[in-house]
Image (cartoon, rainbow, N blue to C red; front, side, top):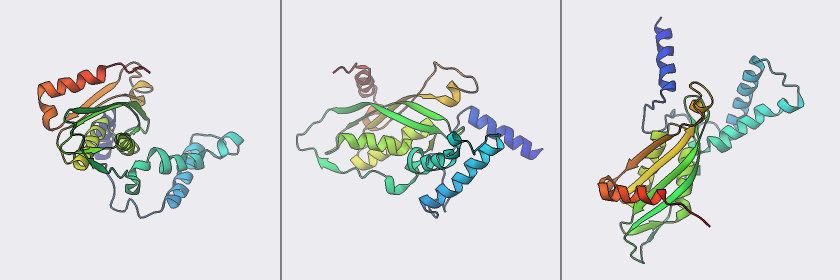
Length: 225
């Protein structure tokens, strides 16, 4: 009975999309195996899942799927679990004395829901106010991509992006808003195709109403080329 109760509790956690920690939950031995060793193990597990579902893996179309999925998991969609892939975000002195808000908006987010391993797809909008240092624009995109490429909940992803930029820029004045669709909601369960999830994290001056409002107004601006 206790096991059954735990299963119900875990199921409700997933359907309610509740995260339990700020840091991505990792075992201490998470990096004991090489990427190639992980791929070999995952490949066998995927093959077992597909065979259990009744699929014929001798079919030419399916035969390579276990290996493709394993490589995708390790090297692509969960590549952000590897600390060696963390982007080096070099900062530069703000020599031109730009003292206003800098906003990088419409950064594409591709992540994976940690409860059902289905895609999270959306846009991130980031802003910071320089405290004497600036960071290359592309590095902001790379930070988003790094933390997105792991099993995630959107709230944690939003916080991790802000915390990383605060550490890099040595300022609390960082903000992030993410608007994303979760296929675990859109394609299964309630199957609400139109809904999206918005999360935000505001640090330092962005906790003030006027600064926060300025940021939110900027991300509403339509960009045309």
